[in-house]
Image (cartoon, rainbow over all chains, first blue to last red; front, side, top):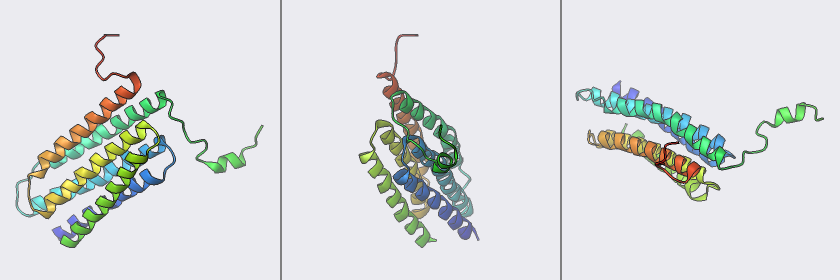
Length: 111
Length: 92
């Protein structure tokens, strides 16, 4: 039972980290790549840390708070780091991609 | 469960390679900083899987230190890209 729960948490975490790296490869812009690098990677690594919490509490060790502290720290610092990097990218003049949403460009009339 | 841990380690290594590709190729400097941040997060995940694989609690300190170092590197690099200095001594 505990092994099934740990395995599900590991699979979810690895899936989100893999989605994050695919987004790093495929997205066209710094500002859009930051979505992939912060949000889904944070969820993935939090799921992996919860898997270690479940595993080590199941085999009889005392509950260590270091994994939960690491997860909390990543939750706090990932948006702050993404904000600072996007701010510096905007100030140093990294270009944005021209149009991401092509549907609105087609439907709106052009003056 | 050992099979799941091993396959997960392989998949995390593949995503580490993709992040390293973005680190090498990335056209601008903030691309590389974002890729380094992602590499730090993936390394924390790999350490969590190692601590499950070799039932050992010694990796948790390394995970915490790596999280702090990745955030400090990101912040310092962002300030360096904007201002050209990391610690500004004039109080403006």
